[in-house]
Length: 250
Image 1 (tube, rainbow, N blue to C red):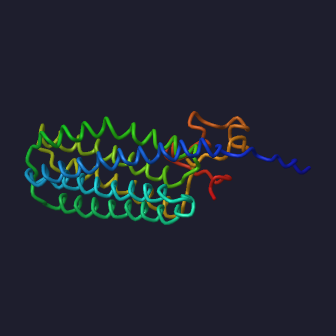
Image 2 (image 1 turned 180 degrees about the vertical axis):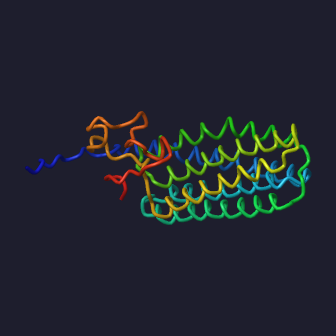
Image 3 (image 1 turned 90 degrees about the horizontal axis):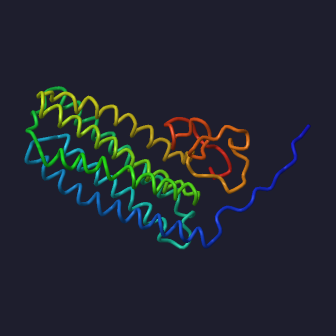
């Protein structure tokens, strides 16, 4: 027997969408400002210490700025949805560029690149970024999901990737400073490169597990399977796997 059609209520009201769009713009501005400072400090400290990890981290900050700028450009227009595809492509290319650079530098370091000196500035910067970035990513992801914006969600994942890189940098610099294990950082960075490729592919295709469907739309929650994030079981915005292929994936 065919199930009856249920008309889903509309998504956020125009007033609520305006509030969410303004919130996304503010979060993007904060991300850009922080990453500009982070890039200058990391690249300067990395050059002084001959640290490819620190220089790579600084260049990642530059890529993060380009991703956030793409979202800012999208939401600066009268019709953000019309600019969504282009912004997603910019974010995807940012992921690929990051993956390519990290891979090349990691392989070069593993094959006998110059050993980096101890960098107290780098350790402090990595620890600070590890504390700041998760909050920015979480706030932008929540706003992006409620708004149904795939670009805001994709950029929040770029920010989250920066958090992973902060952890890798902190561990790598720490092990190098404590034990002289220069191979630890490039090895872990290769894992981050693989994650970046995955995220880039999903952004390019426009996968939007985290772009929440309109309020009332039948989801996994109606079947008792929704998790705490409001996503389907295994959704990438919550646990790293799976995709939402429902009404929001337009």
